[in-house]
Length: 165
Image 1 (tube, rainbow, N blue to C red):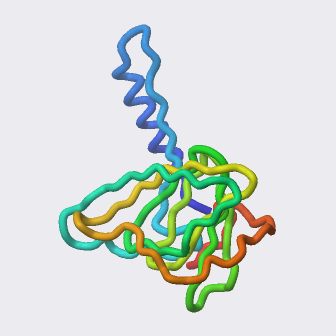
Image 2: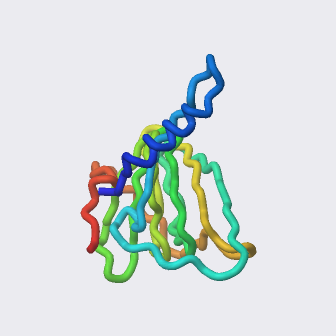
């Protein structure tokens, strides 16, 4: 499971409430994700050197579609704004077909330097993806692999994936 701290959001809410003007509601903060590992349990690598650069993309994936196989050389996380998505990884030493699903309102700690793709079912999906890279560096690298058929089996939610030590 991903670590979901409870003390910090409460302290933040109290601090925000203390500064709220009379007659105004305090802001509510909720940690959606805090982790040092990707969804498959792999520990994230150290950040690269150079000028840090944050990139945020909105990615819209039509129903019954698969993204091309790719990998990310940087740490990133995807928030599913609408729909749902199944992610599947591929590569040396990886169990063929290792996958999990993520639904609207959930956050996925993405894989780093592991070939993977995402695919949708009967509904389209909209993702907001945050990448922590370096200026001028790649955030996504396409991998030349045959697309292959999109599996139709049900998979467990990403939050239920067993974690590596």
